Length: 623
Image 1 (cartoon, rainbow, N blue to C red):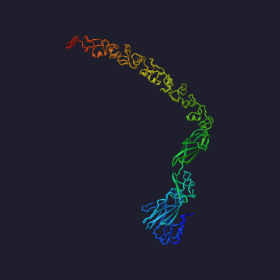
Image 2: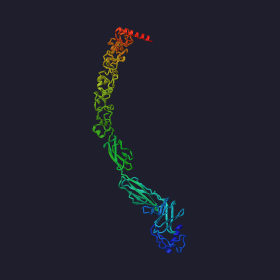
Image 3: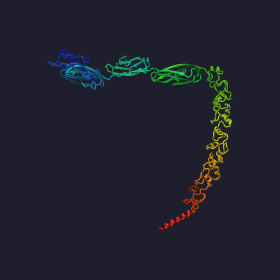
Image 4: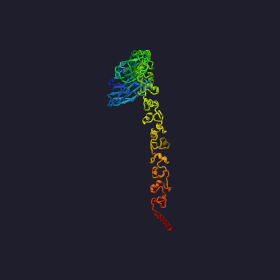
């Protein structure tokens, strides 16, 4: 059904064609409207007859009638330009009607008669002389659907346009594989794109150069170079020319390189072998290594290294898969020959035949060691006691000894003898006391005990001191050798300091057994014991004189005040009086109160007495 505006426009066109006075030109084509004939069209009801003697119509030319997303001056020439020109617009967008007139000499009224699904309204603007472009601010709040806009200038219809307003389509696509490798076929699928139009046009830019490389809902391509991203853009356009585009970065991944080595190229049945992975990733890093061993097709182990034991002889297949951080992988496979070991003793059957051992018996000589282990140790797998020391090879290995040496630790005692003694045949000094086991046997000490006699001194230390490591008290003085060393005494001498008192008695007295005069008072400890003085105190009676000095002066080291005059002996010697006389100068004044106790002039004492009495009497008189 045609709208009322379209019907009116048809009648107007017929009237113009009949009178030959006006021509309507499509605004999209940009043609200029001829206006030489100034007959006016009736702007009233559809089908009205032209007016007689119409007023003169000012001249102007219509250059453009359009609808824009924006109208602004972009080049600075003072004229507004149309940006985003089209006939279809997104829902909610702003539509700016736009008209460009030339040769404008008078004012003209431009009207836009808008017919939408929800109603009709009219917009108007005035073109003044000198203007070239006129635009209404916007047609806003337009609902989805088709609308018609009739443009009239000074009451004459000049254009009838249909516009579409709706939601644009939504572009989306998937890439398979998501992370391709160089040369892979990549499938791009845009079937999940959507729009109001049933039929959509698809344009693909597959190399990021801005041009269309392919069209269609589904396309394929491949990339030759790896190690970087490719920008793929999909543009979707509906029948109203509304469009949407989406870009995705597709990384072209270079796969890793895998390799591995084996701990031995000659694999042996029943013997462990280790495989070590190596590899590189040109554009990233390897995330994991996956191992498949033997006939298995599932992953047996993951990691840089793997260890396994082939259980069967023959061909053994090993596969390593390196997986990089983008999920790409590379696999390398190697096949190894596994040599037979029928008895599982660590020696392949071929080698056992060379050595003369029994390939069907793991321990040919029955010494407790498998033949393979004996070969590793250098022992003879056909002889139970390789070194002939009386111990089987298996027993020696159990003890930590060398089955190829009679004296493993080189201490001078054969391994078998050491076992009898209880010593360690693999250690020269079993008890760790500094003496080889053979030396201890020679001395009669216990090679399994560091301190044979338990005196607190190790056997070697006793040998160094000259004491007997088998006797706790070498000098028989009652003190163990260790205690004497601790006190600084000589454990080989009963009276270390030669003061006449044995070391053990000095310990009882509290004196120093290593010092003849413990208190350093000039008297040996034995002399002090004889005198009854304290050998640990230099001044036994506390009179200020060392015991030795008192003895040399004939004084009593046990009596602090020999003359009982109240002055100790040391003080008397210091002031010059005699510690043996209470009145040294015999002046009738005892030393205790005599200011001059060493002056022995008797009259002087009388003079002193008289002077004292006189002074006393004078004091009474004058009182």
